[in-house]
Amino acid sequence: MKKIALFTCAVMLFSIIASAQQQPYSPSNNPTVTAITSKYTYKEVKHEELTNEKVFPILGSYQPEANSEVTGTLHVSIDADNKGIVWIEGLPQGKIKAMLRMSPSTYKIPTQKTELGTDIAEGTLVYDKALNKLSICLNRPYDEKNPASAFSAPEEQTTAVVAEPAKVKVKGSKMKIKAKEEVKVVKPIIVYATKVETETETK
Image 1 (cartoon, rainbow, N blue to C red):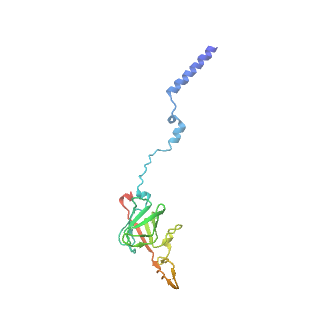
Image 2 (cartoon, one colour):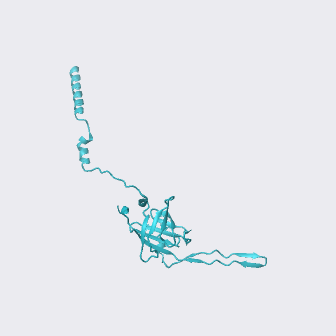
Image 3 (cartoon, rainbow, N blue to C red):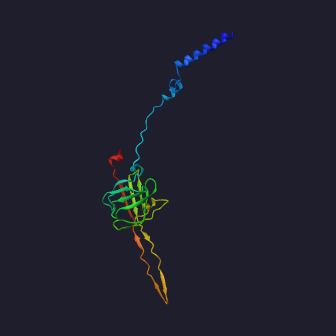
């Protein structure tokens, strides 16, 4: 009886091994897996190369609006040593530096003197990617909380640079008063321009 039981077990074992060898398990042979995967297709995703123009959309050339004081094309380029700085060329005041404050396209124009010798008070530079519009405001303080406010204020509004207070010198019984420096009033300059699309940008 024991021999018959052992023989039966051996036969079953060999049949299982033979069956496994004939039809090895594979997910592709599983009806459930096939039913799920048949609903989807595999597509290779191509990642575009990140260029400076894609990371910093403000870069490029711009055509000023007809009523602007600027007549030629404006160019915004990135600084060779610091990618947080851009340079604006084409303004009558000369080449102007702007520093990134809110990514990707809001910049603060610091107080500076251009290579033409023009004094530039603080300002704001903003690029609207949806409208392809560049907005530049010079001689008006940069607002950290709301940079766009520089363009919503009346253009005729002026910014006064506060002069130093009068200095009094007492020498013996005589008193000398240094005259107050004149208060320099600077009118804000606002320029709007539209980006000039190139072939590489439209692709």
